[in-house]
Amino acid sequence: MKQMADLAKIARELIRESNDSSQQQVSDAAREFIETVTFSSSTEISAMLRREIGLDWMALPVWARNLSYRLACLQDPENAELLNEAAIDLYSFGPDWDDHASELAEHARALKEEGTS
Image (cartoon, rainbow, N blue to C red):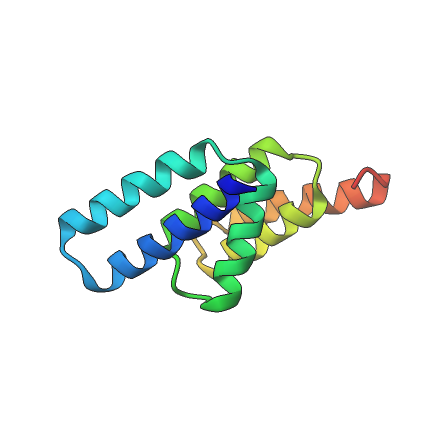
């Protein structure tokens, strides 16, 4: 679970740097976040997203949320709950991503109907 603790810590650093730092500090925080989330498991990513969104719904940059959900969904494409969370998040920042959100939501519905998830 060390990876999850690291991911959560790095996400908080990204949020802090995004809010009140120089462009270089934001770039460094973004690079570290991307490197860490890329090698995190779906479970770790989901836990970080739930924690950070629960603490402050708007704090984590949209690009970081999208990347995180994308990576988690690619790792766990049969997890209806995760797909629904990702769809809801995309709908929240649309309409540019509404088509993608609809696809995720439809796939989640199909999984639930099949009893897969």
